[in-house]
Amino acid sequence: MKFSWKILLCTMLIMAAACGASGYFFVNYVFQTSMERETRQALDESSILRFAFETAALNIPSKYDVLPDGTVEQIGVYLENSGQHGNRLLRISDENGKVLYASEGFTGDTSLWEERGENTRVYRVVQSGDSYYIQTQTRINVSDRMLTLETMKNVTAVYTERTEGFRMYRQVTVIVLLCSGAVMTLIACWLTRPIRLLTRATGKMAEGEYSYRAEQISNDEMGQLTADFNHMAEALEQNIQNLENEVRAREDFIAAFSHELKTPLTAMIGYADMLRSRKLDDEKHFLCANYIYTEGKRLETMALRLLDIIVTRRKEIDRKTTNVSGIFSYLQEIYDETKNPEDGRVKVDICWEKGELYAEENLLKTVLINLTDNAIKASEEGQTVEITGRRMENGYYFQVRDAGIGIPEEEIHKITEAFYMVDKSRSRAHNGAGLGLALCTAILELHHSHLKIESTLGVGSCMSFLIPDEGVNADE
Ligand code: ADP
Image (tube, rainbow, N blue to C red; front, side, top):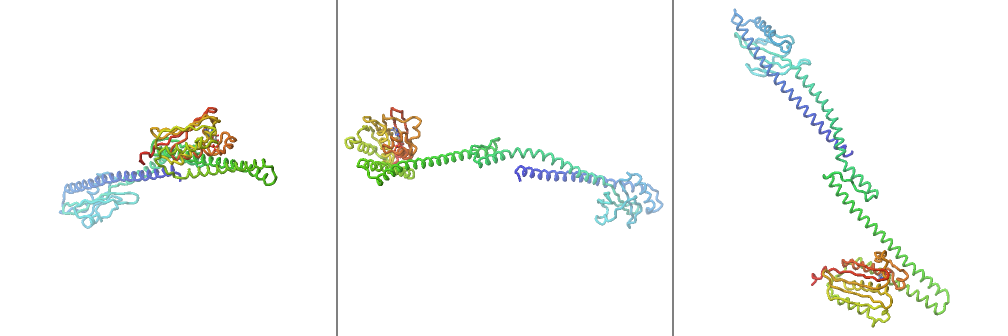
């Protein structure tokens, strides 16, 4: 059953019960009040009649000591004719219960005296056919006689009024229920509107429309619920978006990986086939073997880099407070022209300030070597690559700058993606696979840092990052 119908049904039940109960009590209250008034009147009349009887009995000249039955009947007729006709009946009986006078239609019995003692005014309500009466009884002690005076007052009108009252209340209850039902239907619809809007929103979201939001139409608890729902939907949409991006990135990664694997493998298979199926002269033989060797080396580098990325992303690194001198001495060592004269086509200038940083030294060396190698590869013979290290207020700052070919502006944000190469043939010629910067980004993320890339095509590039001082003092 719909929630609005439940509200309507409950309200109608409560209203029906309230109308019924209040009607019952009100009509009964009016009835009780009327009956009390009628009873009082009946008892007063009974007293008046007794007094009138006694007065009449005293005024009659008596020849006897005892009041005769005939005189009693005469007084009864006199009393009957003196009162209101039809509404009140009269009966007078003697000491033995013999009826001396009775109005026409008097039906009540004399059992009242058995319930109450003598000299007491008593009454009760009796029903005769469709009519109701208040029967009263009183003793008259006159001229040595103990007579009983009974009256019956017709109160059928009070009972009819009660029946009418109930009938009218039933009609009023039905009208009130119909009107309030119509009003409550509107109120229930209005109250449950936020629920309907929320239901629609959940339905839309279940169908995949994650950007759909429920309309907030109030500031009460329902409005708060709608706001919370929308907030949750926003977080959900963001999570789904992130998941979709991740899935897409993985698909791109797999596609690029397959491509990077397929191209050299196809060539290597071709050259290997040539070597085994034909007799080649020495020079061609060397070229084929050399191609297989260099491409094999490239694949090996690629496999190792990939492994590095995967391992780096998964592992919790062991950061320590480290002196930068170790890192720069190492760089000076490997980029020393005199020790590696074949790498000396590009000069590497290293300039650094003393200091400490909080990092995993070997991983940081990997980053700097990758950036420096990229800078060397991008530079022409005779150009200089500058490696700078500077102590800053909040961390240690590294920068690798070259005056090489530069990167087109629209590709700067892509070069940290795995397998992305700006100039594929140039990168491959340098044994590149587009994984170096992806590895650097992963390592820097572990150090809560990120790579800043500035480059101008034909002018040069500058790669920099800051290792924040998160634990330098803590460790000391
Ligand atoms: P690779 O292994 O090919 O060097 P990287 O991820 O290190 O892969 O670099 C991605 C691409 O970014 C490179 O192929 C290169 O085209 C470009 N790149 C990186 N560093 C520089 C730089 N200093 N100057 C110009 N291009 C660069």
